[in-house]
Each structure stands twice: as C-alpha cells, then as structure tokens.
Image (cartoon, rainbow, N blue to C red; front, side, top):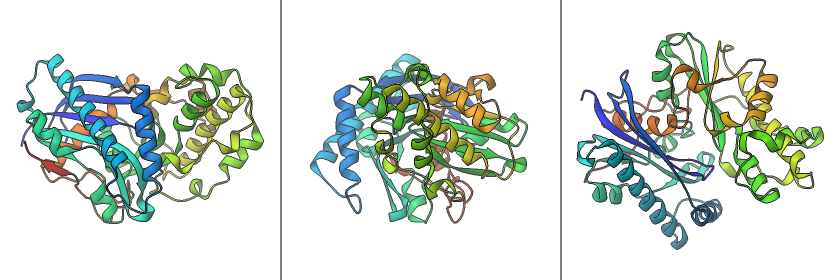
Amino acid sequence: MGSVLAVGLMSGTSLDGIDAALIETDGEGHIRPIAFRSDPYSAAARKTLREAAELALSFDQPRPNPEIIAAEKLVTRRHILVVRQLLAGAGIEPGKLAAIGFHGQTIAHRPDRGWTWQIGDGAAMAKALGATVVNDLRSADVAAGGQGAPLLPVYHRALAAGLEKPVALLNLGGVGNITWIGEGDGLIAFDTGPANALIDDWMAAEAGKPYDAGGAFAATGRVDETVLKSMLDNDFFDAPPPKSLDRADFTLAPARGLAPADGAATLTAFTAITVSLGMKLLPERPKRLIVAGGGRHNGAMMRMIAEACGIEPELIEAVGWNGDATEAEGFAYMAVRALKGLPISFPGTTGAPRPMTGGQVHHP
C-alpha cells in the first residue's frame, strides 16, 4: 500500500464536538493534509453523552445498556453526517478512501480495571458510507496490559521528523498529554493531568458559559494557593510514565466555594503546574515545547505554563501544522497503519509490552 486517502475522526473528552480530517498518507513518512471541518455538539447531545459517561463509570466492565446504546447511535449518526459533509466539500467520494479512522466517544477509560470504552458503531458507519472503517483503536493495547493512551505520539513523531530533538508536543484537550521525541525517534508519552475539562465544567456551573474564551475570565481571578496545593496532593503526579487518566479522575470539589473568577484562575494554574510536573518526568529537557489542542487558545493557561515550566510554549501553527486538526489527522494516519499491520502504540507511550497495532476493521 502506497499513499492513500484516509479520514480521521475525533470527539474528545471535552465533549465539544466532532473533528474530521482528510489526509493523504502512507501511514509512515508521507502526510499531506487535504481538508478539515469541526462540528459542535448541541447542548442536548453533550448532555446525553455526559450522562452516558457518568453511567459507564459506575460499571465494573462495559456492557449493553439502553441509555448507552442510544448515545452510541447519536455518536455514530453525527459522525457519519460529518464525514459526508467533509468529503462533499473536498469533492471526494467515500469509495475513494482507503480507511476512516473512527475514534468514537470515550465514555470511560479504566485501564487499571483492564478496559476502555469508546462508543461508536464502526460496522454501521462502513455500511452507511460504503468505506472501510477502523475503530476501537485502544482496546487491544489495554487488553495486553497497556494504558491505551495516549495514541497520538506515533503521529506526533511523523510530524516532527524534521525538527531538532529532543522536542515535546503538548496536547491540551479535556485531558492533557505530552509526547517526548528524542534522538533516534525514541518516544515517551503520558497524560499530565486535566487540561480543559475541569475549567469547562467550572465555567458551565459558575458562569453559564461552555468554556473560558481566551482565558479572559481566569485572568481576572486570583489563584487560591491552598486549594491548588490540595489538588496537587495526588500520587498520579509522582508516578512514572506510562500513565493515563479518565476525564472523571479529578473533580471540582476542592474549588467549591471559591469566587467564580478565582476558581477559574486556580483550575487554570492547576493545569499549568501539572504540565510542569510532567516535564520533570521526561528523560531530557526538550529544546521546544509545541502545543496543540483547544487549550492553546487560552492565553492565561499558556502564560502560566511558560512560567511554571520555564520554557515558552509555541503554538503548533508555528511549525506549519493545524492545531485543530492534529488529533483527527492522527486517527486517519493510525487507521492506515492498522491496515498495514504497523504499530500504533509502544512500550514508551502506553506501557504496552511490545509495539502493537490495533483497531477493528469493518468493510462495507
């Protein structure tokens, strides 16, 4: 298989919507972005997915449930629509695709219990679109004893092929994760802590807004050092990589009672300091810290990260990449690798016992 067309789909733990990217790639060194679109979830859809996630976390293992089945149908239907819109805009027929990398919606991530749960019906998507779909990209890694996350490092490594090493890529989504790429393309990756998830939850509860646009609200507040210290008192931050988090592993409880702006400032500082703690776990200090994900738009967060880490974070656009599309592109890339039997996770990224491929393949 040479270079082919592939679509990647990502709906993250922030539950803000669906990102879809069309790329040309060979799953190795060749990557050419072609098109991208992002469609937000409605408030009703976010509520449905949030309730499904809350329910899933109460289970000892994934199992059928009417509410979760309904949420999965919603996720699948919305993703199919987004793919159709993306391809129509690019003038590409679905049959021209080698693969669609369908991440699905994570509703629970429990590698400590031996499972991770992303809802989304790959077979239904393949049938509806007439294209090969690769989904369930994390489960094989978890079943082998890995964390199942983060998965983007293999794509980060391909993007960073021409950069001076060592370099680090920080993704600030609902949860933060960092990828360290050393000389010889060595990979270390792990979740650093909550990124936008707690801030978004706080803004919804205390300010009636879905997120802190630009970090402007946090910028008006004062960091409560007592609350911050209590939130940092968690064994996760001292644990060596590989390690990963579920969105629900941290809560707003310690910040309850703070003034709204002070809570936003404190939670933003929490994200920044957890990044700095993660940086200390890297085998060598990176020459550059490149930032992707929605958190890169939060000016207060970026300033706090610079102060906490002692390194100026660079927007991923500074090196010519689309920071909004990176995750979706990565799942297109991984889908092609899965079809070729190439690894998508590694001992240094997820703790897998060996480099592993993954995913369930559904043909139309």
